[in-house]
Length: 208
Image 1 (cartoon, rainbow, N blue to C red):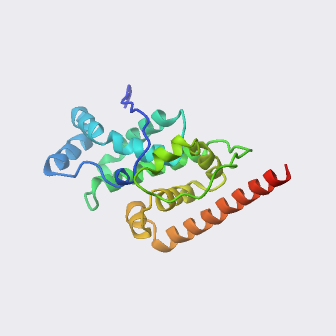
Image 2 (image 1 turned 30 degrees about the vertical axis):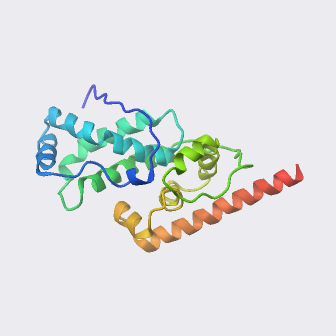
């Protein structure tokens, strides 16, 4: 698939943008079938319909990053290559999310971990409709993701979905294909890790 350039603009997600994209219709099913057979016009239409959805989910997982457009493009390269594996036994957006998360997690694993974390003003967050805008306004988003650099990518994903986006464990399980017990364990361990990091930084500040 040479010359594939369909870039998206960075965008941070709101709660109601996480799990939904354009509803799948008969028209979309036909587009998927055509794109899977190599029709680039059909694939471009799928791209246009879902690029914002993919961008929002990738942006949430990787945080502030100049790599966002590259990762989104990598997602759609993977979608193009594996589209004939989509059997329609789940919503297309669910399948698309899983492709995006796999590509994004691979990207995160390849990134160097930061040595320092600035968390002097960071506090645990709970979702509401404008959580992301509040984070940006208070310049805490980078601190949050700096702390999350210290946890595995799969744990980062479910922590953000549950603690920041406010999704229920069952919703996360349906979206990711992981069991509820696995999701719950990852949320618990990440919460413990984040609390430990925060407490350590506060102790350092007290003794500084």
